[in-house]
Length: 424
Image (cartoon, helix red, strand yellow):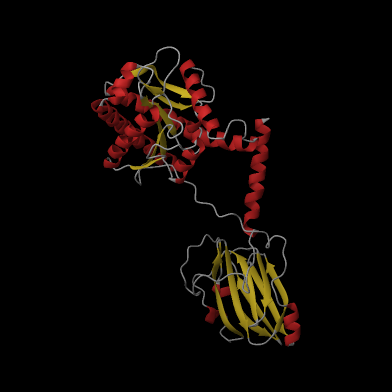
């Protein structure tokens, strides 16, 4: 079933990509302003087609005017007339006019002012003012070995011109423009400061675990502030999902990380187990099939927090969204695993107490982001008296902060090196 959905998804995405160039709506009298002056202007173009000045020009043929645009390759276009003042407008799928001069294009002055350039992402425009009203007799594109567009005009009375002026209706052209999207966040490669989002668990109306008058929400917030300070001193950009004792829904925590352009997200917890004894730090990475008993109980607790926020993400993704997330996780999940392993190794090297299974998979809500690596660090368990003492010990927190900073830096260097190799 998933394979068939994935195949269907690829077809849909291909069709969407093929249709994007024409999803543009004309607006206003000239359907948009031309960007900047025209001849010789340097603009950032993605155009594959170029105007070839040597094969372009305007000439009289009897009473008619014939404009020829020599192209390096064919492009979609449309041409029409607008009134007040009388002018010819031609729109092209982005066309590079660099090196062409309007004066050289029409040395005889058969048109009035001519201007051209980029007027909308993906589209270029030429506007030629007319000395007198004219009808657009022909607008064709010849796609042989020497591609060119030919526009043929003939004089007409003013009333006839006014009757035919206006942009033509087009089911494709008049569709809404594609939604403007932020560029995708590229995987960190060491060329910019690392961005880490720290996520102190719980907060506000959700205090988390409680023991001996201490709450998980306050303890992990204190630790997160100390870790943020150390990371900032190390040259790492840090954003926190909360910087005070307030409630932040789990899905909002992921939104904050995504908006910050996180290279990685680290959630901090100090939970409690109602049954059994657990002590020491643990590093969790995402694993939908996690089966460890302690991980299962903790996952149940965090998922209940998701329900407490009024949003249950489980079971609401359709098949296509699921496939897209699986594709994204194919890259990010191994990176999350490595991050959890490196952090656990750094904690162990610092001589700090770790849980008997220091690296585990879990299905925590805050680990579900498919587009950036994320880990959850259980600093200890409030159900353990020894762990409570450690969490309240300033010197222990300094050692744990130093271990996590070292681990993050080590992971980031290796992750960046891998990213650079993948782009070669």
